[in-house]
Every structure is written in structure tokens, then in C-alpha cells.
Image (cartoon, rainbow, N blue to C red; front, side):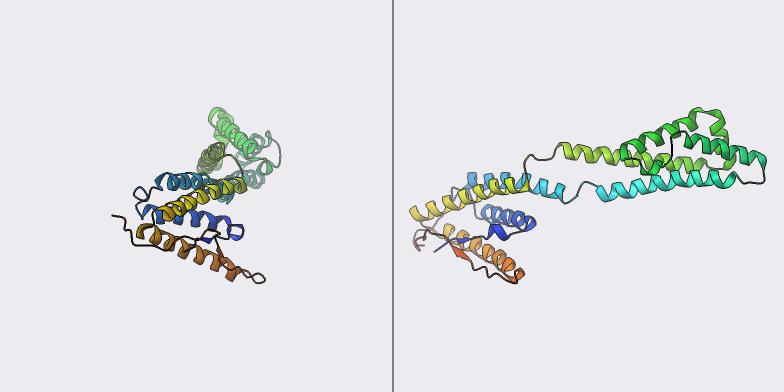
Length: 256
């Protein structure tokens, strides 16, 4: 009886992580304490966790798309306000034209191309402008005259949501597992090999049906993954490799 060697070098990161998780699950379902491999299974699970976390981060699972949508939302509100001010500067009512001028000046004091600023800079500009609206009576009156109170509220809401999400993303990066995916895969592979070595040793010294069934389950899982990468490859044929150590086939002794 042999252990089939997984073609780890050909497994994509998602496949590798799923494989090691499945191996741990198979072991946990086989009474690892009774088989005296509980420590090794726990090590494999502990090694897989930071690998999985880092993979999720590097996939961009840090709200990047959501951030872009929120940034676009506040960009639209800010650009819209400036365009409204420009349009109303041609209004037939002199008071409306004056209010438009005040609004334009209130935005333009922060410079041009505001929506092209980096995330942090744009956040600060919008916070400053919203504060001006709240504290500057002339600017507040212009907003009211032009009927843009809801628009200011939208700009403020969009900016707050963006900043909150941005800070959450920053916090996620701060807790990012150390090391690269390659390094963490190496650590996980060591834990996997240690687990297999212990199963091999126990089965060699005290053959039992419990070990035999677990080895068969692991081999079946490995065959499925190796076959998957084999089917994906158009030029190379990946045959299941066999471990160098042959396991004695003896199931006379049962584990109770």
C-alpha cells in the first residue's frame, strides 16, 4: 500500500489550499486522537490558515472594487456640484448667479482636478469643503439658494462611507500574515509531509483498518487533484507518483 504524492508544484494556490483543508478534514473525520496523529493534523490546519488568509488578501478581497465604487460616487457628487455652479453662473436671476459664484469659489479654493487626487487627499478636500458649508454663512446661504442641500448631504455621506471602508482595508493590510504565498506553501507542505510520515510510521508499526482507510481516502483525494491538473495540462502528462516507502498490507489488527 502506497501514499500517492500530490503534484503540489502544479496546484494553483486555491487548489493547494483546498487540498490541504480537505486532507485535514479527512483526518479529523477519522478519529485523529485514536490514530495518534492529532498533533500533526493541528499543525497542518495551523499552517494552512495564514496561507488562506494571505491568498484572500492577494486576490483583492480587501474591498478594492467597493472602494472604487464609493470613490466614483463621491467623485460624481463633487463634479456635479461644480458643474451646477458653472451652469447657474449663466442664470437669468442675478441672485442665483451670485450664489453660483460663491459655490464655485468655495470648491475652487481647493484647486482643480480634485477627483484625480489620491484617495486620502480627496477625502480631506471633501471634509474641508463640507465643513466650510457648515461654518460659512455665505456659502451655506448659496447652497440653500441653489437648492443643493441634498447634494451636499450626498457628498458628505459618500465621503464618510469611503473613508470608513478605506480604514477597514488599511486595518486588514496591517494584520496581513507575514511572508509570501510561496513561503507559506513551503511551511504547509512541511506540515503535510510530517502528517503523512506519522501515518506511515504508525501503520508500519501497528497496521490497522483505521490507518488503511485513512490512507485510501487521502490517496483518492490526491488522485482527483492530480487528475485535475493533468486534464488542465495540454502538453504534460502528470501520472500519480508513488511514495518511496511501501506500506505493509495487514489489516488483521483492528482499532477499537
